[in-house]
Amino acid sequence: MLCLLKFTPLFLVVAVCHGWLFGDLFEKQKELDEISLWPLPQKYQSSAVAFKLSAASFQIVHAKQSTAGPSCSLLENAFRRYFEYMFGELKRQEKSRKKAFDSDLSELQVWITSADPECDGYPSLRTDESYSLSVDETSAVLKAANVWGALRGLETFSQLVYEDDYGVRNINKTDISDFPRFAHRGILLDSSRHFLPLKVILANLEAMAMNKFNVFHWHIVDDPSFPFMSRTFPELSQKGAYHPFTHVYTPSDVKMVIEFARMRGIRVVAEFDTPGHTQSWGNGIKDLLTPCYSGSSPSGSFGPVNPILNSSYEFMAQLFKEISTVFPDAYIHLGGDEVDFSCWKSNPDIQKFMNQQGFGTDYSKLESFYIQRLLDIVAATKKGYMVWQEVFDNGVKLKDDTVVEVWKGNDMKEELQNVTGAGFTTILSAPWYLDYISYGQDWQRYYKVEPLDFTGTDAQKKLVIGGEACLWGEYVDATNLTPRLWPRASAVAERLWSDASVTDVGNAYTRLAQHRCRMVRRGIPAEPLFVGHCRHEYKGL
Image (cartoon, rainbow, N blue to C red; front, side, top):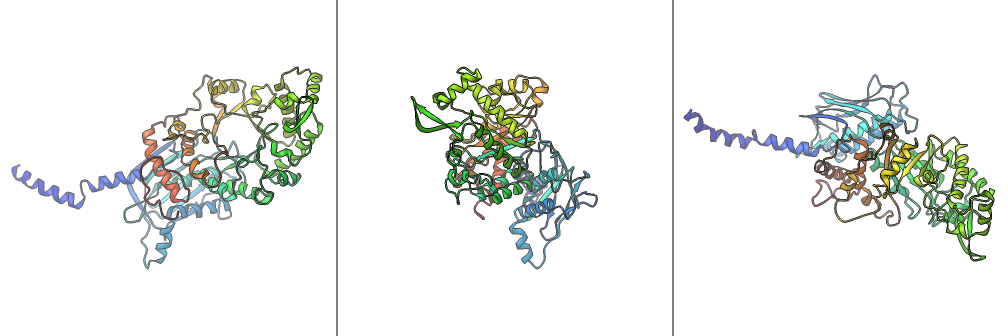
């Protein structure tokens, strides 16, 4: 026994020198730190068994039994995109070497199981985004009902790949079964208060896909400017945009945004907000807005859309007919928020109309009169509609499939209770207004929100289909929008995708810091969470 003890220190020295005892432990912990999935999948099992990946021999392929194949351009495009994410520079370095090592994992097989893989379709509110992923020697299998689930699984697979100290890509043996908690996971960007160049919008759609967001709520026009170029009413952008040529979205621009988003499983829901927020509309359309009065004479300023003229509704019918053909999504956002009644109150023609209709002095009834006619116009285009909560609050008669967006934070829980109690589908944005900035890690506040934390039945809570992170444009443009949005919006992404039990802020910080570095490496200038650095932070930026 004494003899054995004498040799123990020597054994420990040898063991430590060779890394037998501690080296592997540290390496495995480091690897696990680098495998930072965001958002966290519903079910996730991973072991320390690692497989090497070589850019020269690894490939992403269609499984033999898949209903999609090489003709599915959406998947072919995604295969190339994620291969580039995983290998990037390494791919070019390996091609320059005389001999490249072989992959332990030779391929990722993507298996689409539904008869219709939906390669040429558009994602919708009812899209199935679930997938399963199994990584084992010598291949991995990604299984999904359609291309939309496959896109989410490809993002997860790419996040599983990590780099060791020798620059070799590795992936651990893993089993994942995943699906989103909420069907509507959106980002609102405002291109009216500041014009957003096409490249900024596309870059943020790319970042949205990295975070498994699936709705781009495009607040495309508002009071300050009307950058949407209408074929039916070209004067709207000619006279309403900041500049008629440089600060507009042409039909081809809009088509590009929609297709770029579709290829990433993202819906584009356009918002044309009326009757308020329409000052820029009046520049191009005569008599659309209400003339404001000072005493008995016009003041020269204008208020909301004039709700008493038939010409207003004839214009809206033509415009929304065009909008319904330009944007393929089943829904259009009609706004309906923050209508200032002071101009209506000052106008003698409006006052006369109010008396004729028996509205008295309740101008919310006049707003409802306008909104009701607008809803009928949009319903005739066979589109569903989303509205801000004021439309519901003012008692407008809504179609059963209307989506009401709750945005006011002071009575959020009561509003959710009321809207769902009336049987309407709801999305929540009130706690996620990212244009409000503060010192410190405000992402934690967004992360801690529980969307279903209101008094209501299970049936009511099922009517909450998701939420949106909103970045209004008063203080952001192309120079600072992206770093202000990310990774703060990522906190909302996990809250809307992952299970309700995923609430550990400490664990989230570790993963989100790595995810932020991953976005930076992929070309998204996401701002830091706190003190620290990224391993590759200055390459390519």
